[in-house]
Image (cartoon, rainbow, N blue to C red):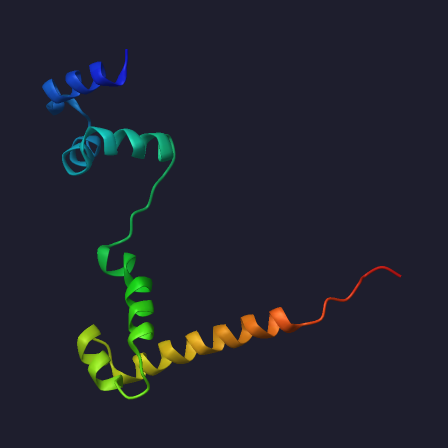
Length: 112
């Protein structure tokens, strides 16, 4: 049976999909559910809460907007304390320094 035939059957008999497949079908649609099944079918998939799922993106956005004088504005915008703004920026700077040090380290030969 091809995908279009299966889609027609699923659309007609949606209520017979087991949970959570029915909810995923309602949210993702047939194509999205098929893709999810192909990627993770038979395995366990943990989906974190939305707030924690997007935290790293939010932190990077905050760091990108930091200009050295807008700590208070950023803390209000992102709903974090000023110390958190400082810590995120400092962590980013530390990571960049570490990467730079690693790239500048001379490569030594392990051969004798």
